Length: 87
Image 1: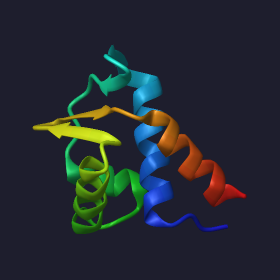
Image 2: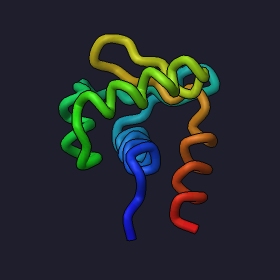
Image 3: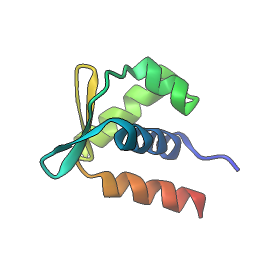
């Protein structure tokens, strides 16, 4: 089956958080440099699509993007997105 971009990107961010995550307040900071192009390749998407989705989540307070680092402020929302998409 096919997951949409938000679910694919959420899944990859959660995988990176499991591999490279460090506690950051209530969230998890991915302690590994990752570019939007890298995320696009991992999620099978365009860099532009990834950029738009990251900005949406940042405005919603789900993630925080600073330079090459992403912090998952509300990882449970990303986990729920992936679970709903798989259902």
